[in-house]
Length: 285
Image 1: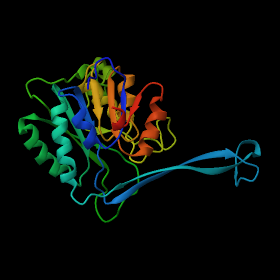
Image 2: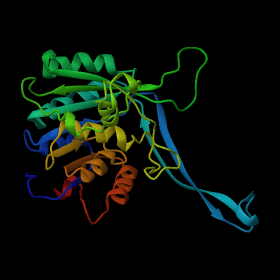
Image 3: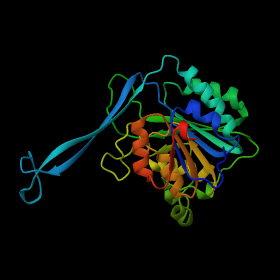
Image 4: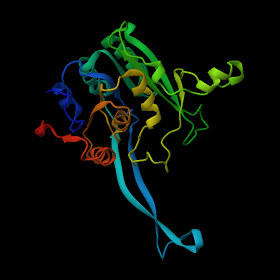
């Protein structure tokens, strides 16, 4: 199949079946946020507040309201042999990555050390570019150990001598000690390091889709800005709520998103506009 000149795509199918159909070296950027193998089901139920004469919440000018439960989105994050599941997909992604392309693999502490060894073997150790730590400060806190409040994003390039990294396009961060760098540098801000402090998706923010484990647009925007060019095709084969697609569109990139979960496809269609993407099943390719 060809991508140039075609529409942005959502595949409602297992990525193991879709990836072999995509053309070699087609994607300047590949991002994947696979299930983290937490051993539990990921569930999120949306909720909205509506005006109701019988409601038990009182608001402005004595109006009463009630909470209404909405759609439940869920998937099982349990794999008996996680790497037997993920390794063949990573092999396909290496084939799909452009010669100057970059792959970002988003995991957490449970599997990231195994992923580093596997990607070193698939890409070559000299193709490792970074390990990004996305740090946040939200959610429950254990008192039996240091609370885990970060994810790991491994970054590999196809060719360590030729890859896209546009530092000038990346959103800048404020200096922690602006008085030490002078007014011009302080006003411009600094290039982010490999530790990214960024909040999770706000439960009441405009980004919220109700999909479990949705990642914030700010994290994906930084990835797309740095490691792709306007007009490039980008791929997310565990697309979930479609954050990569939303960011890619805002930055003039093209996208292919893949997810087998019908709830994910429903969320992506609503978020990205059913009239602006081509949603396919394997029978329709």
